[in-house]
Image 1 (cartoon, rainbow, N blue to C red):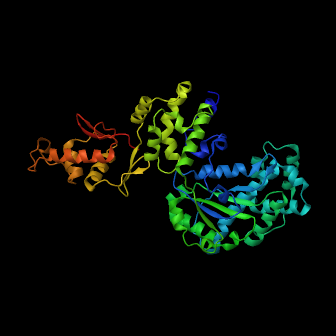
Image 2 (cartoon, rainbow, N blue to C red):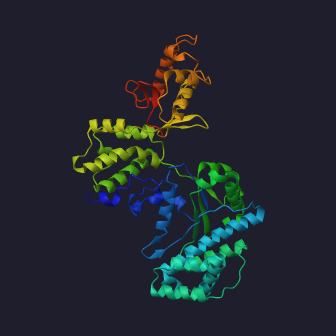
Image 3 (cartoon, rainbow, N blue to C red):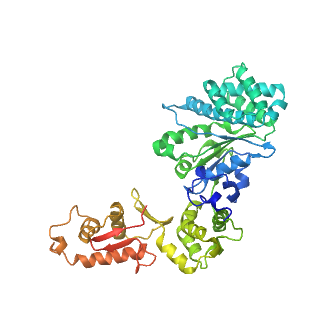
Amino acid sequence: MAGAAQFEDAFTNLSAEYEGEWLSAAYVEPANFGAIASMRSMVIAAEAGAGKSALRIILVQRSTNAAGPHHLAVEWRFTPALEPLHGSHLVRAYTQQVFGACAESLLRVIVDWPQRFVAAHAWVRTSCFDFIHNALGATLERTMMRTGRNAAPEAAGVLQALREHAPLASPLDQLADVTAELAEIVRELGMTGVWVLVDRLEPWLSADADQTAQAFRSLLETLTLLETPGFVFKIFAPPELQARLSGVSGLGRRRLDLLPLTWQVDELKAIVSARLRLLLGRDDIDLDSLCASSLLLERLQQFGGANPRGWLELARPFATAALAAPAALPLTAQQCHELHRRHPPYLRMDLSTDQAFLGERELSELTPTARRLLRYLYQQQGRAVSRAELYFRAQRNLPEVPAGAELGFDGSEDWTAQLDTALWRLRKQVEPDPRTPLYIITTATGVRLQHVR
């Protein structure tokens, strides 16, 4: 139980931004981590739940060790321009954002490791101050106050010198000169180069996919940004952005790599096992030994998809049960069976495409009739739908239930038998065990869909 209190959120949030410092201890590297952590610009393509943000956080954490930073890790919080921009104006607006983020990160290094800055050549210190002043502009004082709140005396002196510095005006739109000088400053301060990392683009893509994609296409068509040694971009791209970046010149001219963030079964097992060990405070526990049966692993492989979030969500009730009685592990086969039935994979539908999923597994073999019934039930938000309504409005696609239909006086053949057959076929396609349904429940008032998301 030693680790339980500290790591009890290991299966709770499943969003890297809200997970604690323990994330690095539980992190499992993807197979191509070495390539991702290289000094190459790249688009890192990944589905939702694949661990883009966790990977970004780990890269930032590992950019510094006990001896200090070895990369300048810059987290660029992309924000769309307030008005439509095109061509060089668009590139200038977004490179200003990038350079502002670089200046903030550089300032943080100066505050946290002032001895490196003080020991640098005079031209490095002057160039560093010039860049920070020019990139931050009117936000300099506020950024200094935020960054220097707990500054050591040596760092406080550096901040005061920065405050009093009269910068040499340097236009930041000379991209080749600015990136080359910044990369040189960073090397002189003992770092290999600059990583500009940008993540959490989904909200902007949802708001305006065209504008967001155009911003990144324009940047990645600007080869100057991709050709400076020691200055690279790492863009964590969801599928909708990846598709819109195909054909950019940076990819075509090999200035930019496209790397997928994917996971094999053994890696997904290792991710769950690492969190179990932290949660339970036991080094002898892993996914294979948590349960006395193979049900949990079968559940994860069948419904968890190929991403960490899917596996961790489905493992959560088992981890919670293990935490309640860690000395009594493994969980018995009966306990695992009951947990699986009490916490089945959620059923969800994408109403724009009519795709249905159990957990992360798509129900791709639904017949047209089964899909119509499932869609109608899904839209009712758990309401029990009368059998007549389900047959006439969902299966027959009529606007209303005919008068007298509840009694079978609509002039049709025996519609109740037709509905029973359709429901039986739907259950065969959805339910793990149609004889004891988990999702499509018949009640005294009709049919209801449960365990939906």
